[in-house]
Amino acid sequence: MIPSPIWRYVCECEHQALRREPVVRPASDRIDPAQLARLSSELHAQTMFAWFTDLTEPDAAALGLFRHTVGCRLRFRWLVVAMVPRPVPYLSVRSGLPLWTRHAIEDEPGVELRHWFVSRVPMPVRYDPISKSRPRLNFRTVTG
Image (tube, rainbow, N blue to C red; front, side, top):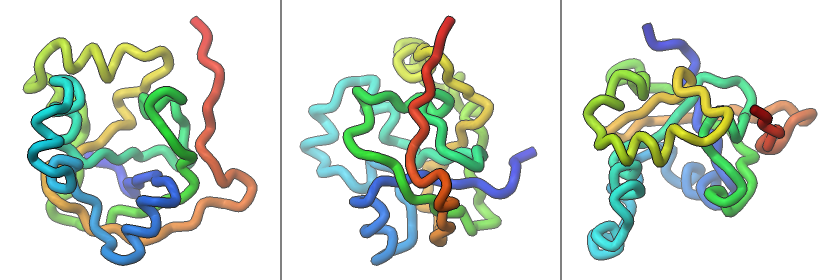
């Protein structure tokens, strides 16, 4: 069962792009093919999806986003509005990814794979403001 709602948290740059065209696309659809060919294998596999979550507040560790991978703050939330197709749980597609790719994106402390959803097709979205009390990505301390 796919939960509803599903969100995508974005930075200012992507927020402005989505205001112009409110559709989230897999990164492979947006990256120049020559640049895509130069990506590492792990990054190349990640670009074939658009990534989403069911978390109501952005949590960097749970989403597998860390300071070394996120260059700017994710301060805006967009709601997936498509009923068909819907993003699918990452856990349902991970077996089709190479093992080294799964390790690269899953082995960070604190990740919560059950909150990851992906789509290989563009997904229509609409802006859904985050509460003023929590306007930015939460980089919680992970111990373990």
